[in-house]
Length: 384
Length: 137
View: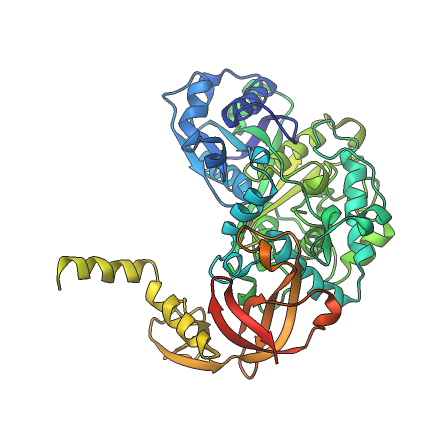
């Protein structure tokens, strides 16, 4: 297998955007191309992730984006894997470069949904569940994670205030990220007083619906060295699955696919969780970050609560989690999120993260899943 | 078979309609339709086509008594389209008695967590436009 590198990264601001889905996808892609210092024609293929293009009247985004980049002749793959779509397009790009099919490719993720309103998004997002049993019985996505939260709080004697600490921490980080959707300092009290969406989760336990696009340039080592000194290497890549419906899982306080994907990525990298300097994890809801950081092996089962109480996951903690602000504060344009995490790791490991830089970071991990973790991808990166 | 019947047969196999219809019929009489692997005995919900444990494709139908305890749940206040008129309601994961199976569904008339402590006894009470219905025993 070829060594695989990320040599360029770009992202629009996440939030409520006015431009079309195509415009924001192309803006992020162009920023990645310029950041890599390459010509568009050097890109051999595109991996384009998106879930609800239908909301902005544009599906089959791959060829549309390639055409707008002036390379209509280049092949593309349009990818949907719910909220984990971005990491799947990254993985497909990685695999094709690792296998030697291409020297350099583009992976872009995009979403444009905020113009549709809360009812449309709540309803359409519920189609990402195992619909016969979940969405089709009244479960929203906050509801599914709320069910995990209730089981977690009962099993590990944690409180809703503990969940709130995750939101407060991620908002603190997002405040330092100029591209974050919700740049606002919040307190535990703010979270506790926010409206209940699906008990025990309240509005401030939930990530926002966001518009946004992120893109990276992925290539082999030879191509990387010929173009730039500012690049990072992909040293681990793993994917996994879980029963699509929560009812199919023996334990409701763990997401099996995270562990499967993480073990594969750690094995490939020859690393253990202790070697990771920081991680961008899938915190679509506060409960998810607690579950994720346990399933990734950073903390024992039920102990992520102690870690959050002690501040171990803060920007200056022992293992900073979501320095970007995470889905919670940076935002969650679902087709872009998995790529956006790689953009953050690229910025962190190439010294471009500004005020939110993790000190002395050399190894970063990304973790992104679809639905309630029915599908998951984990990647590990190292600075060069 | 006539061409239309062949198309309908393939459609039902591809889209799993018959299994879901059977499941719904069982739910209307308070049962959960499960499929038991004829090779290893592993129990699945009706819509599984290969044994998760051994990969076998042979199953026999098992009609499980739709009673159990509430494993977890949420009370929905911001609902997907079609469910607004029912808010607040609960979406419940029920651990079925005597088998290693959980089933999830809709429960009306739950306004606060004090209405439904974890471990509450509940039963399958039908299936309609709200999905699988679960009620407190």
